[in-house]
Length: 476
Image: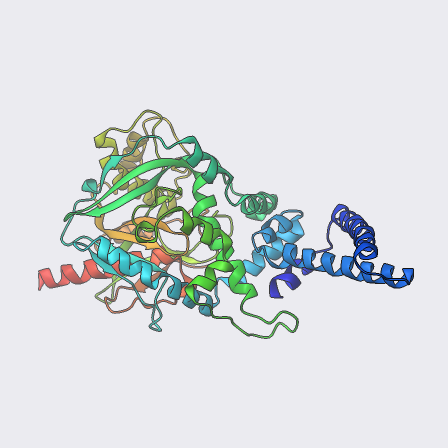
């Protein structure tokens, strides 16, 4: 009922659909009347016509119900018909992303799946962070058993995937992409890089024997957001609709068990069905599971370690208007030729430093998909901003349970580099209406609320806190 009312509130049904519905009712009416005459001895023609009309009307109502109240993914296609509808949906999703009960619904769903990750990676340290209120966040972290170099993480790139795979991930969630295209017409929400093109690195498999290692593949940005980030949009819509009653809009949150929850999240249910549950998070070969980086910039305030966070702007393609560690981003392929072993090993470090320069110093030229010597350009900018003595340290992996994407996490120690911090000038990916913030690094619970943050950002903060604690113990 909540979905039905929301769909009807999006605006009137297109005229063509109304005409088709009317013709269907008239056609069904005449057919039902003829069947009644054959099967039931009705002598009163008017009564027969009335019964046939009532049956046809009931049938039409049932069809409308199934069309408008049983397919939440169609909400995105409906919103794509106009900028006004798209903005309404955007605001609806903003409301949904802060509904704590919805996060609890997904926590129930992923509890048994997280246990399987722990069994799959016995040599690694798998953690499920909780926020300041003690609620589990929708992210799990995988820390290496000991210190590990960043260039030892990516060990293999798999061969090209088949046409069936490309077709599936390129056509999935079309309503979401149509909605984003309509939303981008607004100058205030435009994305200069679009929502389809660009080649990125995707996760193929995580192993720990004993060091953490990942094998990867490539996919387009559009394939990634369709099969991963669309799940966040679907979740946000669900959270908003499930938070309030249908007619009076009073707060009345709904709680589901795991199986029932997937019935109202059809995109997530479909993505889950592509892989066996025990490898859904650690070996997602059936979808385009984008691989990203989250770098915690660690500083000290009053002698205590903290990390910088900022609110993402409304223009970014995924997780707009929420807090995240600075910097972060997807791992771009950065090459047209096949990657060598050395290329793969260097990608996490290269991506972290390029994102650091791009987002913290607003170096726009590092934001594109260059086919030149990108590593050389990053080196030149590193020297220009005098940050060549800074070296990212690998802390672990964070698997976001909202978008089912994995982030490579690290820290960059800025405790004795105040001049670097003073030079920060954040890029367009973060809102300029709020200041850069600090979050204290605590090993017990990150002092954040799960509804305020990108979930992988919480994972990055938790891993940074573990790193800071290990360093404190080593120096004491």
